[in-house]
Length: 256
Image (cartoon, rainbow, N blue to C red):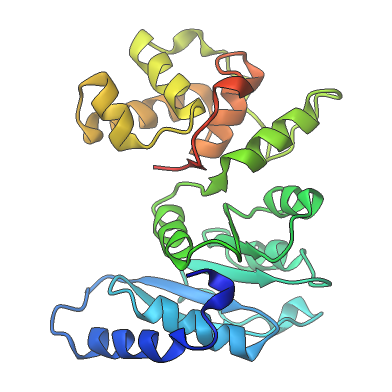
């Protein structure tokens, strides 16, 4: 089932699942609070049903696009904002959200394949991009991963962004660290290279014969040594420093 097909015959099924969550005594006590932003009420309500059908998530609010940044709701009760962008929508809504709450994690649902819009969304501070043609499970997983401090980006898009930046040396996402990689240990370099391949923590752990907790420890150490804050900028850093090549990146997602 695709995100774009949530509307319709799936609504009733999702509503039933959501009600089961509400009635269950096992409902999670700590939930990810998700703010929904879109111009269409039907899309808004459909996404709300999807979010509320997951025990670890709840909808903290909904907002309809407006030209005025002042019209944004209070963001203190939200952990993640899901912004459904369609043709003509203001990308600047991402910056508006982060100006009001720097800790907010912003995920964008893209309805087209315009690479420039996706690159600009990342420049403005989005930490996740999901295409409306993808399965709803990609959105819910993106919410979990970004709330945990990670990024969610399609590897194909990352390759295109990096290739586009090669001729003029532009940094397309944030400001990549100037720290050199010499301080990284041999094991940490192995982790960086596997991150560059798009491997998840579980697969890295299996390949290195270590626990996932140890992988997370390595990543924390790597972030501190090279001066980046997340997986996406680590990949860009590794690419710019020659630690990984685009030909080696084959996985579907840069994520845990």
